[in-house]
Image (cartoon, rainbow, N blue to C red; front, side, top):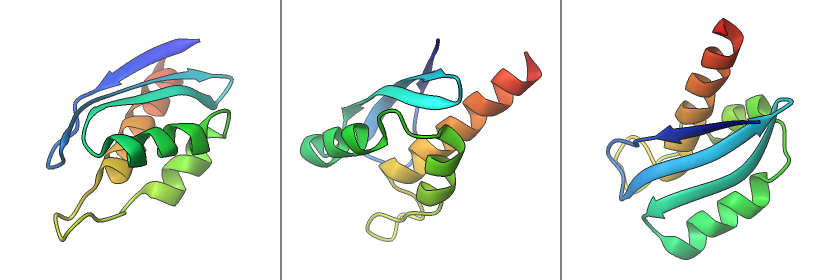
Length: 87
């Protein structure tokens, strides 16, 4: 299981930490941001296919910012998957 930390940009959360094992997401935790909503995202994506979740969340917008914590998670997953593929 590989653990990833991602610093999101343009959103309220300051860090996203998650694990990927066999292409599945585990232990998604946001630091900062809308606590209840971000805990819910972590629960909803637990054990789900990382690529599928990234595809679903990519482009989600929060308040006209052009991004959101969910969008930033999608970007973090993409970066992690690329890193795994390159390893």
